[in-house]
Length: 353
Image 1 (cartoon, rainbow, N blue to C red):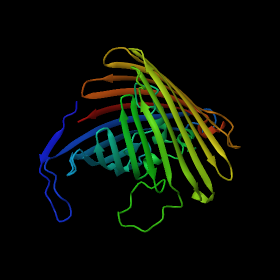
Image 2 (image 1 turned 30 degrees about the horizontal axis):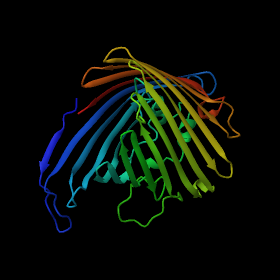
Image 3 (image 1 turned 135 degrees about the horizontal axis):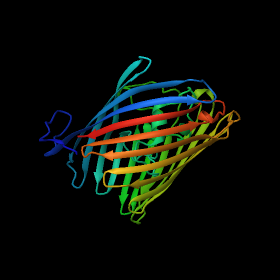
Image 4 (image 1 turned 120 degrees about the vertical axis):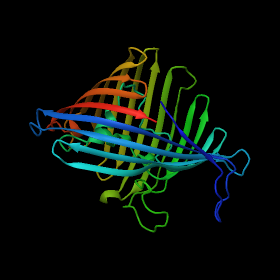
């Protein structure tokens, strides 16, 4: 269910901007409520457990219309995300962030975009799941034992989260994209008037494709990103990432696999590789089931184990509200054998408006 508040008006001109004859503003949003329970077993900190509920609300505002150049359209917008959580320890936090901020120039199937968190996302896996992907759960929740989750290293230079300029070209068989960011890691949180550095990070780029390649039921992605050599974190390093995936839908069953590789050239060369597999079954038009498995390997001398995840999920669509329940097991967190193995129970309610 997606009810949109449509505000159609003539833009008011000013000394700086000429008004558009007709512009359309849409306001949409989403709301998610979730419960997470974590328990540890074997190794690491024994008896570690936590549970809590979280909330996330997002408000999206977009304005679009025609420019004064024939055939050239525009779209501009931003999102406000309201996050909060409470845990069994009584600790509460809440944040408001500005996301998906952009100005687009559109001509036919070509889009020139300026902004952050807006171009197609190389992190979105093609491996199917009936719930939120386990990678997103563990990326957001972090490790129950405080160790770095190796999956987040395998995504490479990750310029998509930084402010920059990109171009997207839609075709009959998929969308090609290119993104350039002047300073990787800069999310654009500064004012437009600044003369400050951002911690020594260098420029980065990402080029990619996602689509069905002209085959019904097929979903293919291929992305490459690179951050130039820099002195970030006190060590000269160059970061390179690759992300590939393929999935195929056969009616009620969808199979998929994703592979991510990161290479970091520094004083201590590093390589992280993640393989993720998924199968989903649509038991009915509203009920779906899935199983996902992932393994991350590391070349670091401190690595003593592979990081393994297993996720079992069930999802149900109530129409305007979607519900999901996942059970996730994790071991070898951060590629360290002595870190605790732990289980995660994750329940989620979501709606869009």
